[in-house]
Image (cartoon, rainbow, N blue to C red):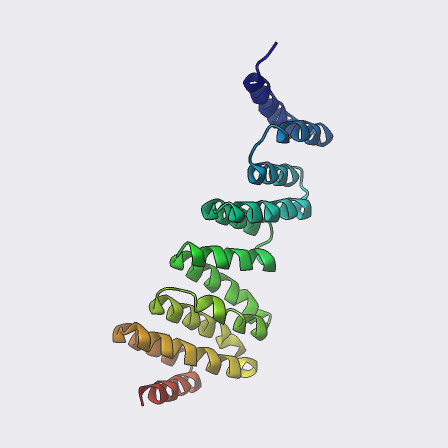
Length: 220
């Protein structure tokens, strides 16, 4: 008779074999048996998501993954939770709840660079779709960044993304330009501020004039 550890190993190999053969019903049957031996609910839930993903069930996979994220967060395993969120992005890059979870996790983990990259990526899409209210909703998230330079970078990337929608987005550009200028000033690196001004000038004279007025107002 096999030991429990041997049975556990066999179950894992059987599960992998089911996936490779495309035997969905058998795979989930093996999973149900295997999950009872897993003490870690987060891992078990993530595994179910992996099965759904393997069998081309994206909605069910995301649902399982989101449950796994919650369980990882509850147990303080933020890196694991962020890893699952990043995997969800490969399925649905603009899933709102997942983006919110990822924003919060990057802030808690102080992953400022990853957060900057994420914001830069999604702002391009949001700007093209003229979802200005959603863009404005990013402000509380950006304000959680620990570096004023990182905050300024995020606000600047939003302005650049909005440039092509200048006529319809002028109020949003003004809004984010004010945030950007304040962040650059508080960051205290005049070189970065001058680089921002030079780039804005190359983009558009009207926006350049707007930024100069904002800088003047914030210097008084």
